[in-house]
Structure formats: C-alpha cells, structure tokens
Image (tube, rainbow over all chains, first blue to last red; front, side):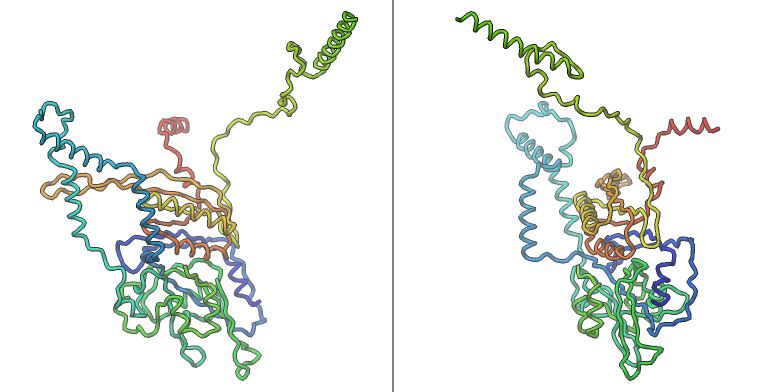
Length: 296
Length: 197
C-alpha cells in the first residue's frame, strides 16, 4: 500500500482532552464544545518516500456532524409510558419539606380560626406567620409565567438547507458542492493528499478550504472511518491514474462562527439529515457513506 | 443362659468403644474427652492448608497504561451534572457500552458532590437571600487502552446519547487526578515540611 496509510500509523498519536457541554444557554444552534489536542513530541519515524508511486490518487474527506441540540420528541407509546411512570413515582413518594410546610400552615390557620384559640399555646415561636408557604408558591408561579421558553421547532429555519440551525433534534452532516473531473457534485468536503502530510491534516485542510464561514471542528481520531474507491472509466484510465481513493474522517462541529447567518454564498454547502442525503449523493458513494454515519 | 449373653454383649460394646477411642488417639489432634463415637464428625478445617493472612495495604494507584501507536492510554470519562438520576444512569450506560464493545473499564468511582448556593438580590434592598442550592454530581469511568479505530465510534455513540443537562469530559488520567481524590491533611504536611527543612 502507498505511503499515507503507513504514515498515519507511524505518526505520534495525538492525545486529546475534550470537554463536551450540553447547555441551552448561549448559541442556540450548538453544543458548547472545547477540544484541545496535545501533540506528543515523541519519535517521528521517517518514512522514506518510496519511489514506487501507486496509480491511485489519494484524497481525504471530512464528515462534519452537527450534533442534536435538543432531545427528540417522544413517540406516543413513550409519552404514555412516561406519564404512567411519573404517576407511579408520585404516588410512591414521600412528602417534601415544602409540602409538609404547606400542611402545617393550613392546619395552623384552621386552629386560629377556631373559637377557642389561645395564642400563648402556640408551640412554635418562629415567624412563619409572616411568609406563608402558600405565598412563596404563588410568587414562584408568577415567575414561571413570565418565563418564555424558545420554540423547539421553527419551520422557517428548517426549510433552509444551508443553515446549521435547522432540525435541532437531529444530527446533521455537511455536504459541499465540489468540482470533480469536470462535473459539480454534492460530496463530503474533500481535498487531495500531498506528500509529507498525514491524511488527517489533509482532511483538516479540506475543511478550512471551504468557501464557507470558519467552521471550528474537533476531529475524533487519527484513523479514518471509511473509504470509497472510484475507478475512472476505461477510456480515461492510464497507467498513472486508475482512479481515486477517498478516506473519510469524522469530526464534530463545535462552533460555526459568527457569520453563519449572513453568508451569501450559501448555495455551496448544505446541512442534511441522513435520510435527506440520499437525494443528493450518487448511489455507490451513498452506500459507502451510509455505512459509517450513525443514525442514533 | 442369660448372664453369659449379657456378658458377651457388654464385652462387645467395650471392644468397639476401645477401637473408636484408639482411632481418635491415632489422628493428628487427638482429643478424646468426648466419648461419643461420632464426636468431631463435622470437622473439616483441619484438612485445609494453613494460609498466612495478608495485611491490608494502603490504597495505591493502578499503573498508568502507556499510550501506543494503536491505542490510547488510561482515559477518564467524567460525567457531571445537576440531576443525579440522569448522571448515574448515563454513567451506567457508558460502562455497559464499554462492556459491549470489549473495552476494559478499569475503575469506576464518584468524586465528591459540590453544592453551590444561588443567591438572588432582593428586589427592594441590598441584602442577598438564598434562592436555591444546586448540587453538582460527578461520576468517573476509567478506561484502559482504547483502540484508535474503535475510539471515534465509541465517542460518537457517547455524544449522540448524551442527555440534556449532563456534561461529558474525556481526559487522560494523571497522578494529579488520583491525588485530588484524597483529603488534605494539613498537620501531616506541616510535619513533612519541618522534616525536610
């Protein structure tokens, strides 16, 4: 096999410390994500560039995914089960401090209204008469009413295929329109491998060379997750170039950059769910790509 | 004739008694003060070999697995969040996933819970009052030697199954992480400092 596969194995392993946060605060479209990769300054084995060049052109592509931001809606069976379980747990649970206080206050009020009430008999000399538990509950209800949660599904944003904030409950994959041998095809962003770099660096270069906005991504591993082989038609085939081999690398989107909303050249890339991707990809390519994109 | 048969019987029983007693005398720890023939019938501890009891050692750190070209070393997967049921269930999910994918989960432990009090300013006034007490729970699953080819699949499954309100963090395990679990003993540190001076 040609140099690159061996090259990826011989390079020092890149360790990573990554921290994934899933909070609703901040940018609505993304999970807050920070990843740092520490390059080990270990032995770099020099692979002598072999003179025997293989007839295959090597390319590396990046499968950039935007993870879901909100949880998927429950199916009817799941909803019914959830309600049942919640009801059972409520019936089996003990009273909380707040509920006990409510009961005590109600009982004290009823004792006060009674005719033979003597305030000296009151055992508890705490100032619970000032702030009743019921008042606290009312004030909390008021605060809840003034809270407006953001809508879970926004139909207009979902229609826009190039926005990274569509379909918040699903994971989306980035597709770019690239020129391949005279045709414009919709593919995972790819770039050609050059001598002296690892395939992962090629994939990173493919990502940064997109005309789109700055996409900050974290690569999951040095090892590719899939490969696609394309043989040129017999007429064009020569001894030097039989076809191309594309290696896919997985990456997770951490931040789409501030200009995500205002990029005018949106026709060049799309964020698609796995089911929608079938429409845009060639069948052989789609088959290979489907095998490593998880539909969880 | 009766008396003769009685004598014969008594002598027979006497003989059996003597035999059994002599059998016991022949065994290793012969105790003969019980005259019942079945005395000591349930003893079995004398058949085992004597084992020396190990003294319980201080809790040492397990050796850190070094990273190689094809696998990561000791990794710490920390799951933290405010909701304890979610955090614990997610940690269990991580552990079961490792078992399913044949990744060795070396150690699972919990870090101490941190309580944060949320104080709000009063509407009319300068005093702050306590609104709520939030508790952050943390569970750690330590993995040894994950394959590089398996890692992206594993990470992706973890990320896609991450529930809301739960933070996931994957880091290398270091000695500092291990030592942070222990309580600080200021008197011991003072004495050590004095000794070293």
